[in-house]
Image (tube, rainbow over all chains, first blue to last red; front, side, top):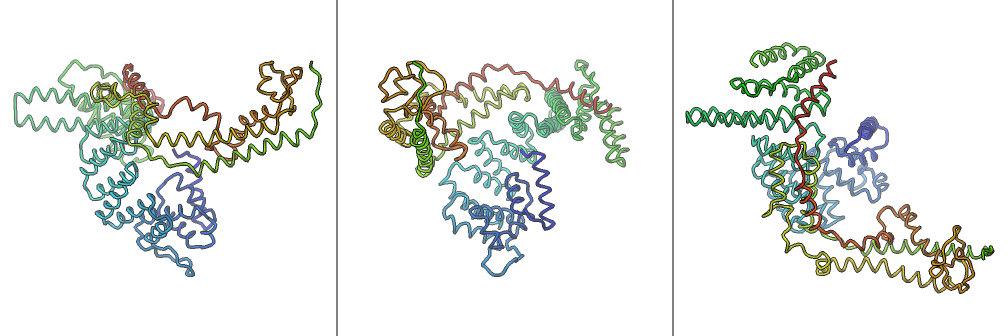
Length: 343
Length: 246
């Protein structure tokens, strides 16, 4: 987890290095440790160090780590041939292909360098070759997490989301406590609109990290979207089967109601965890309450809606908008009025 | 009985300090040799998966209040199901871990290597100490001891009238053996092969025993009563918002 101190130090170093002060190596080490995605800066300063033979020999054994880091940054920036030349006297690694070539000369047959080669092929969009490289590496090292994840990335980059889901599931069968993977799977499911499965993944995330408000929010939204799915079903069925649809409608609405209630609870927990500042959660509460009251309009049994939560949330939203986006205040006002009117 | 023996300063120069220096050097030697001899153990797929399963089950147990009851139940069944639950280990598979240890050639080799790197230098040094540094009083321990320690600490000093506080070189050896561990962890970093005492303590627990941890997790999962804490959150959210809006 990134501490606030380290994040501040990173920013400070970045400004310092940008303005020509020293400390590039320290900056690069910190970037490697904290993993923010500052590829263009890393590329610029990393190449500066690599192209300067004195600085390079100063690094000693760490030189290879720097090569790897610069290679990653070059992949990210799509710099197939890096343009800037800082010194002309030595054969210098300028391209990212060169970085990878230098590393594979030094460490032939190594897993890390193999991965880099695969990523190089990925960056050049030769997916089939990259898959071949990864398959070969997997044979030798069947339990390498990063290779599995690269395969998923290839599938996702090719737009093949179902295949990506497949791969991720296989990966998660073995490495089931990798919360990053669960998160990725959840996002893919949401983009495929498979909300039930997405909800399952978010539950896993909630179990492993219950205090991250983001997951509560995402789970609430997945639940709410599930209800909307159900409502879509209702309309369809109602058009086709009349009488049976009535019963099923009740059931689905029950299912939808349950999901809405769950969603509302999780929006509430997001608010608690984030101290009331999360705008999406406030909106979520208002929408959920409005939808719930619509669904329970005909029935008189669920009369426990006596909390002030929706009104409080509305008030908080109004205040927030007054501070930050006063021009949009009338829109908000009208929307809230609609919800209050219809509930 | 408790006369004060005057110990020659030369004892300190020629016994205590050289002994400590030799032990430190031997420690360094062992560290580097163990680094050279260390074999890379490829992780076993089954062991890895079981470790992850245990982690996941533990997460489920700890944070059960955060997910709805139905999800919790479905997950619990998934884990503890009698037929194909992840945590359920059928009786036949619960082998004696020791037998498993010895049947796996890799593990046996590993254990042998560890034992050798630990026992051989210890034995050699001990013999050397006994040979050279016995038969005279080397040091005085500042606190009194009972007579039982006489046999261990005073080898070579065959006078039963000498106070047990006066010990021979052997006791200095033992003192160094346990005391230099701290020094080594400062100098060599955390992972060093000189942790003899720790190793000896670990000899009891033979390696990673998946069966026990799986059944332990299963039992604790079976016990849990699920209590969904989310309903309280609504009340709390109200309070938070009220405070915010004041």
